[in-house]
Structures are given as C-alpha cells and as structure tokens.
Image 1 (cartoon, rainbow, N blue to C red):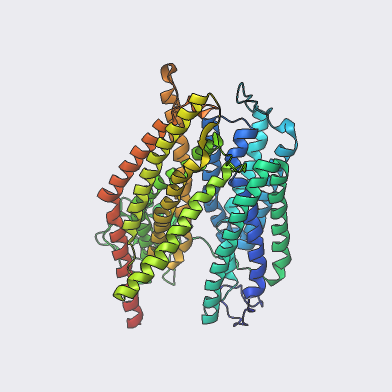
Image 2 (image 1 turned 60 degrees about the vertical axis):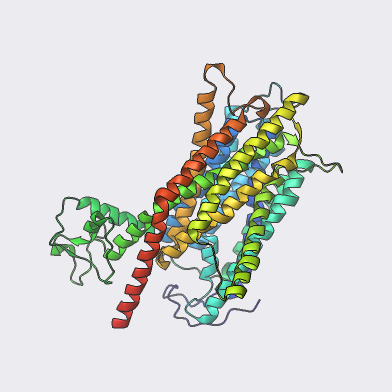
Length: 569
C-alpha cells in the first residue's frame, strides 16, 4: 500500500489548531488490523450463541429466541445512540475505543460463564428433566450480553467512518484512496467472518467451549492494543453535530407552530431549497411567525423554533421512505428466524457425515453467505457484463424488482422450512430420538433462501436509502437500516411469544417453545410466517412500491434545482 500523500493543511474536517496531515494508509493499516480482529472476535460469539445457550444454558425455545432477538435488536438499536454520542460529544476515535472496551468486558464475562461451571445450570443429560438456569445465572449472562450490545452500538456506526476520516476527499488522490480503503475493509470483514464461522465455531462445538470463547476474547484485546498503538498517526476529527438533531428540531418547531396560519407567512430559506407538495404541515417549522425570531444576521435565534426549508425537506424525504423500510422489516424477520429457530432445527438433526465428520450446527450460517456471494458474482459477471456485450448497455434489475424477488424468497424460505421441519420431526418421532436421523444438510435450502433474501431485498433497501438521501444524511441512511434490523428482531420475538401463548391454551400442543422441537409443531409457525410474508408482498406492491418512484423523482428534481442554482450563482 502506498503512503498517503501530503495534502494541504487546510483540510476542512480538522480543527484549526491541528497540524496533522490526513493519515492515509499510515493510519489505516492500524484501523484495518483492528477491524479484522474485532470482527473475528464478535462474529465468533454471535455465530454460535444460539448453540451455546441451547446446549450450555438448557434454554427452551421461546426464552432462547427472546434472548437472541432482543440482544441482536438492541445491538442494532444501540448504533443510533453511538452515532449521536460520537457526532455530538466524543468523536469517532473515543467512541470506537470505549465501545471496544465495553465489548471486551462483555466477552470476558461470557468467557467466565464457560470456565466456571457454577455460572451455568447442570448439563442436560438426554434432554430429559433439563434444569433451567437460575435468575442469578441469567443476570450474569445478561450483563455480558448487555455490555457487548453497548460496545456494538459504539463500534458499528464509527468503524468505516473513522477509516474514511483518514483520507482528504477534497483531492482526487484522497478519493481514490478512500475507494481502495472500502475494498480492503470489506475484504478484512469477509476474511474475519469466514474464519469465525468455520475454525472458531468448529473449536467451540467439537473441541472446547473454553478455548472457543478464549480465542475471540484474546482477539478483541489484540484489536484494542493495535488501535491504541496507531493513535499517533490518526486524523481525529472533532464532533460536528448530528443530522438527527436537525430532524428532531423540525418536528419540535412544527409542533410549536401547529396553529399558525401560513397562508401569508414567509419562510426561512437561505439555501433557496425547492419545496415539495408532500407533508406541507411540516413547513410550519420554517415559517417566520415573527421577525424577532431572526437575529441581526438574519439567522434563527432558536433552532428549536425556526428551521430552514432544507431541514424540513430532509425530514419529508426521510418520512417518504418509511413505507419501503416497513416492507424490509418483514424480510429481515425471515432472516432472524433462520439464525435462531433454524439453528435449533440444526441442533436436532443428524450432523454426522458418512466419513464420521461432525458438522457444527453454527456452520449453517455459512449457507446464506455462500448463496449471497454466488448470486452477486453471477449477477455482476454473467448478467450485467453479458447484457452490456450484447446490447452495449448494462441491464440491471431495478430496486423494485430486487425487493420483490427478496419478498418472494422470504415466502419460499418459510414454506421450504415448514416442509423440511415436518420431515425432520416425523423421522425423529419414528425413531424415538432427540436428534432426527435426517441429515443436517437437508436444511441447506432454507438457509440458502435466507441468503437470497439478504442479497435481493436487504441490499436493495440499503442502496435505496443511501442513494436517495443527500450526502449530508448518509449516516441517517445507515441508522435507518440498523433500526429496521432492530425492529425485525423485536417483532420476531413478539411473534414467537404470541404464537406460543396462543397455541398452548387448552392443553394443546404448542407450535414452539419447549426444550425439544419434536414435541412442538414448528411447521405451523413457518406457515404463519409465510402468510405474513405473503401479506408483506401485497403491501409492498399495492402501496409501498410507489414511494420508490416518488422519492427518486424528488431526488432527481432536487439535484436539477441545485445545479440550476449553482449555475445562476
């Protein structure tokens, strides 16, 4: 890697007193090393947490799904808090450091639960009369998971952004280096993920949980040490404030002026930003009710009472995207179901191959990744390049088409999972065994379809948010995506609880919830999930899809007006 060039000291991102030049690759090598070890650590625990809680904490289905989903949802939701604190108070460097320390403390607690047997319930022998974990044992477990969720909230919104801070994107060379950094970042992420999902998960399941948990804890400690060692070479940008606060200001100001008659009002619009026809009630936030709201320079005295038209339009644009995000949440629920309930199926399937090799249930998480990689490489290399050769113009699937394919894949995933589960449970009951004689490989189709949901719907929705919001709101795009993931986890947990309580009434066989899936009717739950996905498909096509075209049109017109204003100036 080439050393970053010595750019001008007038980098607008730096504080006036800073004499450091942008860090370039001199700084990024520490960041990439830190990111690799951090992801290796976190994914090693996340990938196999379902198996750990099932086999070592004797958790029954509903409690396990609740713990995993709430932990996952909170980790995603904490990213919003991490972004706010970083942008307004601490800055990205300190946020990453504190987040890493919090994650390390959480991992150390979880490692202790493996090392000290008294911190867990006795091992369940033959899955009969399993002893549930006590309240104090769960409290220690939850403390570790909470610290890890807080740490994830500090790390996720800042890691890529902090690496991008090291390049001066006002120069052509800086922009080129930034693009290269993204490639290396994704390479390090993928490398760490593959190692975590193969080697570390295998060690945890087939060799030793103590070693399997000690490895990621040690990796995270190494990542923190590397990160701190590189401190001297970093560009540390001071907190610039948060776009989230601007959006809250608009809502607050519009609420305060909800009775104001704007028919004769003038608006605060220093940037001559175009006004759209949607949600005109929000424009009251920019209405000048009294000239005393402006200071001598013509600027608002109180940003919580008077906002600009641009701030209002940013909120309008964001609200116009919510219907599409709601459709995405339904897809993400299917993905969550496979990382929890799908793994429970894998635990109770025959994982021994003819050669005698035991497949760790956590390895099923590789299937979605492989399916996603195969589709993206096939799409980019075969479809896009071949259509360009034949027609002279690359033909790509539209966002709407990709989201629809993702919605259909989500339905197919639940339907296939239902058929497979019925076959798995029937075989287990016939042989009178906890583990079904059905091979674990039979679960591959449903996990692969889960990967296609991510490849089509999740990627398309992330692209939709990123491309249709202004550059100043790119962090908001990532935040909304994380919130969608968080909501999917919470809703999935709620669905599981409702189904469990409803179906067990009157002494009937619950669809899910016990220590043994063979005593449940999980296939019925999957049918219900498929029905929800079918409703989600109709909702998107009858209502939400129109907002994609609307926001694209608004974004296009906004850019044209901006260019016209620049030409006039």
